[in-house]
Image (cartoon, rainbow, N blue to C red; front, side, top):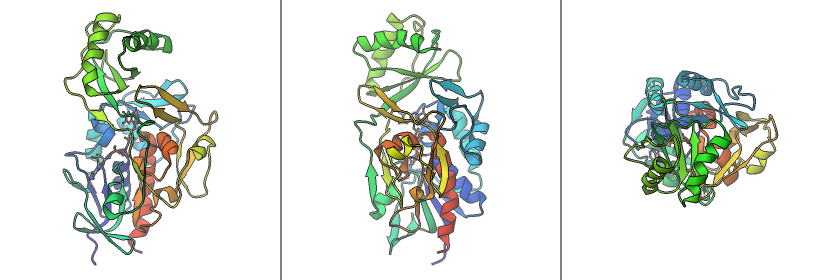
Length: 353
Ligand SMILES: Cc1cc2nc3c(=O)[nH]c(=O)nc-3n(C[C@H](O)[C@H](O)[C@H](O)COP(=O)(O)OP(=O)(O)OC[C@H]3O[C@@H](n4cnc5c(N)ncnc54)[C@H](O)[C@@H]3O)c2cc1C
């Protein structure tokens, strides 16, 4: 069968952007498709404004190459230290625009849910295009589900969905845990959701996250206006979406575990590094962070990016072969960029087999 595309990448979030750009730059005819109308995925469309997982404990890049290039193109400020980790503040609109620019050498199809055919443990077509290899970056293991390959799912009780939104006209200083506590505690005592705040590059604006339902946003904002100094004029957008932390991972030749993460394990076939803690959230908005040893990072082996059973199926980002604990670390976008870029290169070797 003639191959229309060497590589098909499904899902255009951080992982899918990295996978398709790195495959195309290596000379592969690359197709990227997404059910959404434009590239960006969770990083571009869910209201997030901090890219996590790029840096070690000193704020140095963990992964050179595409993750660093993407971060440096996106950056409008220095990384910010938040407790024991560093994050890069960004604008979601710039994330989306950068994705469009970088994807120029890739053939793209938007508003296109994936379909696939497979035979003898090999994917033959994606949406009727003959393909050499496939990289599932959907966060839902959509390709594996379509062809019946094995997948694992995360536990929604430790990966509760959250609402993320910008809150404008905030004049309160939120520059220390004590300052944040003065805002968060009265909100929680009033029976409203536990809020977390993150940097936002717009002036007098913070990004608010809470595990809960979109209809809780307006009561939260009204409470802040009435009761909390610095929030009297605050404004939230009119529409909010719920973002799913939980997802599905494809079972690979190696399943990365929480024990690997916490032991800062290294692998002979390592293709990416990550130092982000295991970050779990319950429905009440309480976060549980389990950190690596000081100054350490763990590695992700190439085998965790290759399906255990389908010889030309690869995965990256939130779809990585990992258990419930490990994905709660490796799903941050810095790590998705790194595993995506690695999967783009690995998949090329499977095209010609
Ligand atoms: C509430 C919340 C807060 C978070 N906070 C942060 C944070 O502050 N910083 C950080 O770095 N990370 C954060 N994360 C984690 C991070 O945003 C995601 O894990 C990461 O963006 C996943 O990237 P990805 O490329 O693997 O998948 P995604 O960005 O989710 O992209 C998957 C893409 O696949 C497409 N797709 C899905 N199914 C199909 C299908 N059947 N056919 C075609 N296309 C399909 C989707 O439309 C989507 O565009 C947060 C996540 C959540 C939910």
